[in-house]
Length: 72
Image (tube, rainbow, N blue to C red; front, top):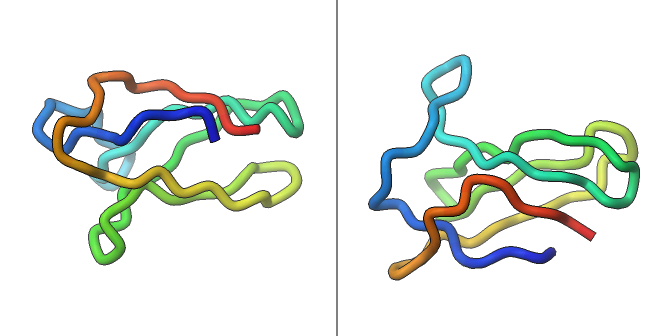
């Protein structure tokens, strides 16, 4: 995963259910998708829409304002 820690203090876009998300490019299958925030684990979690490779991006203090990342 090529990503910095996500910052929870910024205004983040909300998904269809009002959930916060990160845009991600899955290099494994050359597709874009979203990772949704998992409140219980303190991260953004999801999987590649084609091969189901799991991706987790931790949420931490002093994170980044970036909204899009790449997963290897």
